[in-house]
Image (cartoon, rainbow, N blue to C red; front, side):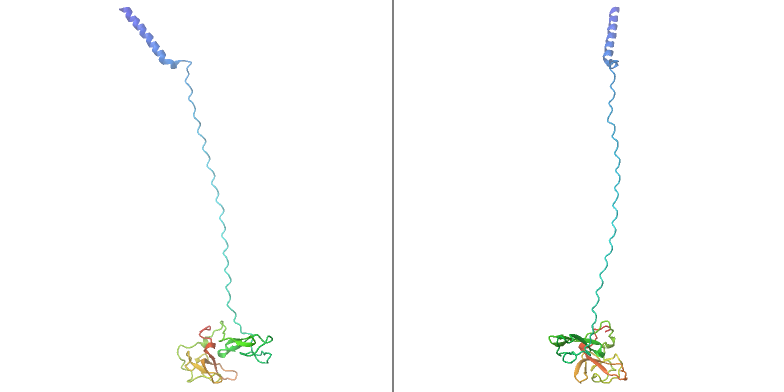
Length: 225
């Protein structure tokens, strides 16, 4: 009984040694643990690129200069027809004959107190006269302004050009007190539609009517009207 127990003890010890030997293979001095592999080193971070410099601001262009304003037409009143003569020994006048050697263009006075001019132009061998009367736009013609109501200081009846008058200068008169549609008589007595003004005294102290037709009157189209 004692011998069997001893054998079992021996066998038990041997078995335990075998098991320990099988599990302790890692204890083999020749079996060293492998070195852990090193991973790829982390790549170096790229450096941030420098910011681009902005372009220089463009300079503002110079403002364009405005064009010169056109000047108004120049009022022409010369040469005067007075003192000029044609080959026929006559002053240039409407309907008169003219040739190439004669004055081709000249001006006569017209309108009240000779305030305007009209041209005489040699055309086709005959002097042609412009219609109406031309007045300098730079001159103030308020003295000839047509009244809105009849001027009661105007004499009764119809004034006649070149005859005596006494009303104040710049008082427009005709057969209707200076109103449109009234008339006057020219120096020859012919009836005309238009207006008159009593001129300032001449060197002799005499005052007379200066008259003109409505188509040769500076107002209402003239400056100051």
